[in-house]
Length: 300
Image (cartoon, rainbow, N blue to C red; front, side, top):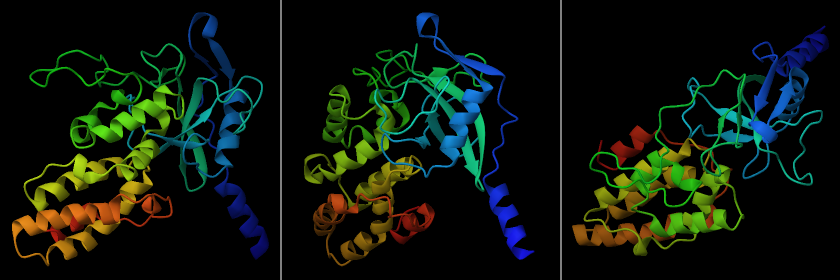
């Protein structure tokens, strides 16, 4: 009896919720348009739900919704759509432009929308497929336009510079890192979907002393904390490593006697703890609450 109950629990854990799917969706326009039946969508969702979440360019992986579609809050994943077949990682030709977006909760996978690169304003950006429930978001992706007194939007290259919210906060602090990422994208080494991991690698390979200019340790750590707390939600393992190690660094810095010594030590600690790629691993998964970190370092 117990064995039967266990089997029922396991079976229900992987049950797919497909009722929310539309009859069909069409992604792209004109010659590039592709229509996906309910069976196509179901097949992609079943494959995605049965696979572990991946890092980098393999699927399924986390979808950050940088286009600001009208999702409710949550963690979303994407998997390629194909007509009459199912995508496999590493297959010849790579994934096509179309994706099914879904949530995975308690082992159940539910579709929330369908998006495509086809017809998007720039490479790396998505737009909703026809027939899906998504609407375009409210973020402004018109590169080069002026926004109040903030000057020209930093969109002189496609792809990564569409991530406006994070760049406004972090771009000035990590210029070399962003150049490294963008060059990789231009060369086709990574797609803009790999932004968080590319950011990890770039920061790991970047010397802090060339890119930080702070007056106090507090200013230094506030900036690091703000930037990495922003990208930890994107699944960036280096962000997790940073948040874990900040209290250790704060304790070391507290031993310095003068503000100049503290600032110099903070820079050395950054290089010691944060600029080694040994820390850039997904297994760094335990986060200390951000508010606790702030309080432990003496600022709210």
